Length: 514
Image 1: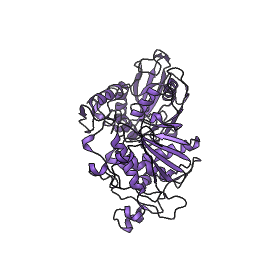
Image 2 (image 1 turned 90 degrees about the horizontal axis):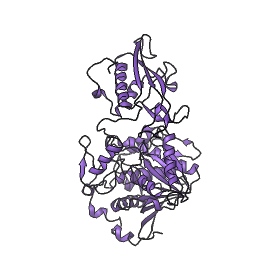
Image 3 (image 1 turned 30 degrees about the vertical axis):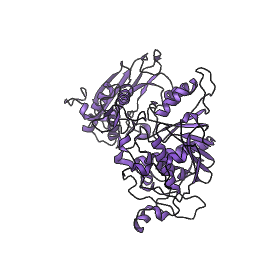
Image 4 (image 1 turned 180 degrees about the horizontal axis):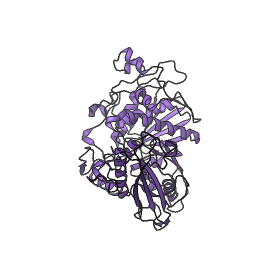
């Protein structure tokens, strides 16, 4: 039951699975585990992450820092558990939970929304599986994807509810916590879930499409994904199938209805009617219904269908995706057009990296923390790289002597151990271009970093920094060698993500000059 004016609504998703939606601070949850959305650098820029760092015991930050040091790369869709002591030693702070699940959330791109849907579906499947495998009975999470990741509240709610229906994490109480500063997002979330629960007929909710179109979506060639929590998947779809058939609703085991299907215009934007948004389907003002803190129960069955006519955004009350408050002194980025608080975006660019938090558009050159005493040398020899004929071989040698870590490294003032590495490229036009790009990346201190070796587990060593190299001329991709026909294009994509493109290169084409 809601107390102290907290707005709360409860929903029964499928048998054994319950959802509570609250407009409160997630730090006050009674759940044993809290979920935090992060980016691939685990930088902690989000509102929930900052809240935990401010309110959790000191051991939490120490465990978080340890996880960052041990994990070379945080992958989108993965779950990274962090368990800490709940005692009040150190900073005198105490919370009711002792486990945090970091989930790496993809950014929403308007040009590829289906890919985002597939990634979020996989993320939630991994999350529910992790919770069940760990024996968790309760889980508290924010509305993943709706902050800095750039998705609208409606899109984030739809993929969340769909994923709960797909996974059916039985005996797991899930609580969704909406930022108390964002009453509008809370109302929009409740409105959307209510509309999911109020349809008694599949056909009433479907857009008028032909039977032929419907059978295309419900073809047995693309079965819906069912997850068992023994780590195995049944009838697993490929990413392409997921994005194509996300609209398919999973049926409960006891249901005899056919799978429900969304219309194809799932992401068609709609204008908001402020008066209608403020009211629920029964015509009552949402604030009147919930201001007294009374909980409300709703029943959802897997036969219900997401309403594609839910309004998405209100342009008049735009929030900053970084701080989640109303935008102060708006600053619009010139390339992508996304808008933030001037202070928020300048702080992000200054202390993290010059990349739009919403769409990852690059603004400026990224400089890494590669030790400054490194050397890169290039030689050209006869021979061939498997898969590229007899064009010759470009050999790259990197060398770093031992040194002392700076303020940009994990353990400032501690010694680090140097390294020597050799890599190979085909000596053709594309290989030469990649070599010049690698030279530019090296000069921007992006090729290596100081941390934990992924191969040996040793700490405080110079190690690769996720720009992949071919360190062998044979063995194929699994042994970091050739043949690998897609390697040159892949490494150029990795470099471009860090701002290293042909625009960075001088007019000279000598690979020694780059």
